[in-house]
Each structure stands twice: as C-alpha cells, then as structure tokens.
Length: 190
Image 1 (cartoon, helix red, strand yellow):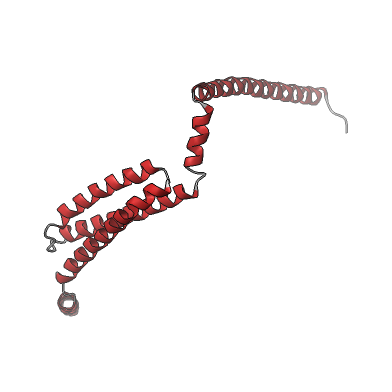
Image 2 (cartoon, helix red, strand yellow):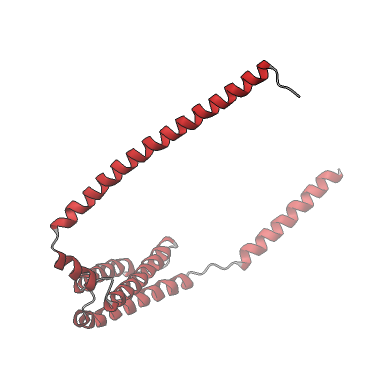
C-alpha cells in the first residue's frame, strides 16, 4: 500500500504540529522553572534575614525550653485538661440556662472560673515547663478543675430536676394519631 501525496503531506503536517506543541510545552516548562527559582530564592531571603538578626544562643535556648523538654509537654497536657474541664462546665451551664433550669449564680461563677483559669494558664505558659513553677501552680490547677467539675455536675443536676415527662406526651400523640386514622378511614368508606 502506497501513500498518496496528500497523505504524505498530512503526515508531514501532523509531525510538524507535534514538534511545535512539544517545543511550546518545553518553553513553558523552562519559563515556569525560572519563575519558581526566582520566587524560591526571594522567599529564602525573606526567611533568612529575620533569622540572621536573632542571636543563635537565644534561638537554641528557646527550643530547648519548649518542645525539646518533657516538662514543657507535661505542662501543655495539664493546660489542655484544665481548659477541657472549664469548657465542659461552661457548656453545661449554657444548656441548663437555655432549658430554663434553675442555675442560680452558676453563669457568674463560670465566668469567674474562666478568668481564674486564664490567669493560671498565663502562669503555666510563662513557666515554660520549669518544674518549680509547675509545682507551685499544680494545686491551683487541680482546684480549678475540681471547681469546674462541681459546676458541671450542678448544672446537670438542675437539668434533671426540670425533667419533662415523656409518657403523657407520647400517649396523647398515639391517641390523636389513632383518632385521625379512624376519621380518614370513615371518610373514605362514605
């Protein structure tokens, strides 16, 4: 089978267009790499200049006192546990308040507890995992957690005191549904 001149010309044009497309893609890749390299070097300069101004000893000291220290991690665990308890107490009081349960001064006490926890949290963060500082405030942290648990328990108890009886409502609904079904059945039969 021999190709005609028009088929030869079509193959030649297809090959030429393929080379043009490949060349355009190659130029696009080259331009993109140049832009990436220039922006990457600009970003490196932006990061290196501020870091160059810091004394090396202070940077190393900061790293050792934070994430490299097991005491720092223990302080973070204690901080998060304290805030979980305070948040749970706040949520319980908010739910009890929305349900019109008797909460007394619990909303005010919860705000005061949150403020005390914020002050204690600042002391823990400032201590940076120092064992002496952590020991001094550990008792206060435990007292805050226990107070938050007491507030939460009181809010839950007040919700239990205002418990709505479900059975009368369910009985009334089932009677109404049965009556409505009987009425519809009677209307269909006539």
